[in-house]
Structures are given as structure tokens and as C-alpha cells.
Picture 1: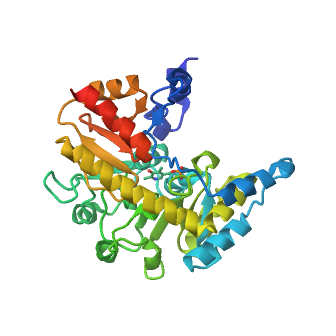
Picture 2: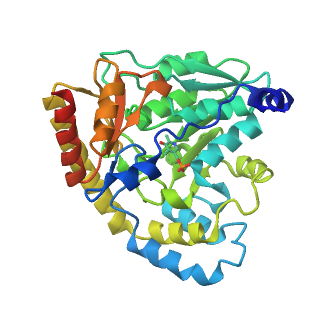
Amino acid sequence: MDEQAFAALAQPGIRGLRAYDPGLDLVALRRAAGAGGLVELGSNENGLGPSPAARAALIACLDSLHRYPDPLGGDLKRALAAHHGLGVERFLLGNGSHELLMMLAQVFAGPGLEVLASRYGFAVYALAAQAAGATLRLAEPNPAGHAMPRGHDLVALAAAVGPATRLVYLANPNNPTGTWFPTADLAAFLARIPADVLVVVDEAYLEYVTDPYLVSAAGLLDRHPNLVVTRTFSKAYALAGLRVGYLMAAPGLVAVMERVRESFNVNGPGLAACEAALGDAPHLARVRRENAGEREALADALQARELAVAPSQTNFLLVDFGREAGPVEAGLVARGVVPRPMGGYGLATCLRLTVGSRDENRRLLQALDEVLA
Ligand SMILES: *Cc1c(COP(=O)(O)O)cnc(C)c1O
């Protein structure tokens, strides 16, 4: 039996799926890059690296790798509860927030039900809906010329909620656009959404936000039991390799999701390192400060080259080249700089560029100047 024959045996939602496209072979590119090294700006990783406290906690785990981790993740959850000023029963840990985003659809959506997201929302939302066999509905985003081009249009999203809608996925700030909306707009949106429609606010980049009008949606949890907020240790905390994320929601929602959570979904080194990382506020402050400075400098430098850069509160910039971006991508890769192509999002004229260190950004701009000349 070939893949097609097995697909016919799969659940209806799985039949239409395609496996994750890992894109370029980074392992091979790293090997070929030579002394200068590869400038990896494709996955929004934090090149400053994690807190030294997280590294120490990880090393301390090496003598207990034969043990199963705490299936409750109690220490990390209590640290998160104290960090956010919320009850520990509001927290669910995931193998990255990706796992939690998938689980939400598995638990609350399904055939005959709708999942709502914005066009140019994070790719995992569509995947989660499809894998659950639910119908994905896309709301149109902000138009060109808007202050947040291609960003979430909360009025359009609210209008698209129908009787079959069970889940709405929003990212604030959003990936891949970098755009955001103020917390007050989210509060107004939630007031318009029926209580039996879950609103998932993905805050993967919240630590990078400098706009005072955007704070975590976690402050709205008390008023809105249908609100779910997801966070990750993969981005600003620089622990993408450990795969740890979490959600905050009503205790009853967490209890239902616990029914399908794999008992040891978060590994022991991950639990320990994330707890330590959470305790190192000065390191996170440095990450935020350096990113904000480099983000502004890089956006200015790109705009000075007459490129259209979307506003961003994240650690990446969406750049529109106004023409098919494939050749620009190829030219950058040939010079040891790896961007993220956006064809999969229907944005073939764009590339997404992670804000790197000053030196990495300099290499990016130099390569770009050569490619665009
Ligand atoms: C990177 C990212 C995530 C999460 O990743 P995990 O590593 O699985 O925690 C979630 N949402 C968005 C929008 C992201 O960009």
C-alpha cells in the first residue's frame, strides 16, 4: 500500500493534510557555510541565547535522565502562577505551545464545527482545524494602507462568528505579519463573542512588545471564561530546542484538556530550565532591550532601501519586495543568510526576517544590497 492508499484509511481531516515542509536543509547549509557561519534569520529564534540560570538548571538534570519527569510539572506551574498572579489551576503545560494549539482544536472542534482565524494568521491554526476535521473559516485582514496592513481585523472576525463556530485563533502580535492590536480592542472583541465560542490569544511574542497599549490578555481571564491565552519559552526565553509552552484559561477548561494531555508531554530538563529562565528577569530585560533597538534600526535600514516593512512588535520583520521574492531569498541563501519565504502564506512577494544581532543584521543588509543591486 502506498501513501495514497493509507490516506484513504485515515480520518477525514487527516486525508487533506500535507506533512510539515521543513524548507531548506539547515544542517547541510551550516556545514557548507564555512568560517563566517550561517546567519539564521528564518525561525524567529533568539540568538542571545537563554538565561545562564537555565543552562545551569539543564546541566543539573544530567544525573536524573533515567527518571520520568514530574507529570504535573508542579514546580514550573507554581512559578508561572506566581509570575502571572493567577491560580495554578489555570495553567496547562505543552510540548511547545504548538502542541496546545493542536490540542485545543482536538478537544473543542471537529466535523461539522468551524474554526475561525484571520488570513495571514499563524499557519498552525489551519493545521489544527484540519487535523480535527473541523472547517476552517478565514476572516479578511486589514487592507493595504491600514496602519497594520494584513493584520487582524477584529470587526471582520467578530462578524464571521456563526452558530457552528467553536474556536477563534488570534495571535497578538501576529506571526508572520508582526502586527498587533491594543488590549482594549481585544476586550471590546470579547464582549461581542458568545460565551460558548473559545477565543485563543496566542502571545508567543508578547515579551518583545514595547507598545504600552498592548499587555497580556491574561488580565481578561477573570471576566471571560471562554478566553485562552498561550505563551511559549521558544522565543524571547530562547529555549526553542526544549519545546515548552503553556496556556492560561478557566480551571474547568484546563481540567478537560488534561484528559487528552500525554502524561509526560514536557520533559524534565525542559521543566527545570524554564523554571530557572522565568526567574531571571534581568536576562529577559536585556533580550527585550536589545531586540527593540535592533528591530528599529533594521526597520529603518530596510526602509531607507525603499522596501515596505510592516510595523512589528516582535523579533522579526515582514518585508514586501513588491515582486516575487524567490530570487531575493536564493541570493541571500547563497550569501549565507537564511530568511523565511512566505509563499505558503500566500505572500510570495514577501520575506520574513528575524531581527538578529547587530553583526547579523549588518551581514543581512550587506547581502541584501548585493542581491538587489
Ligand atoms: C513560534 C510560534 C509559536 C510557538 O511555538 P512553540 O515553539 O511550539 O511554543 C506559537 N505561535 C506563534 C505565532 C509562533 O510564531
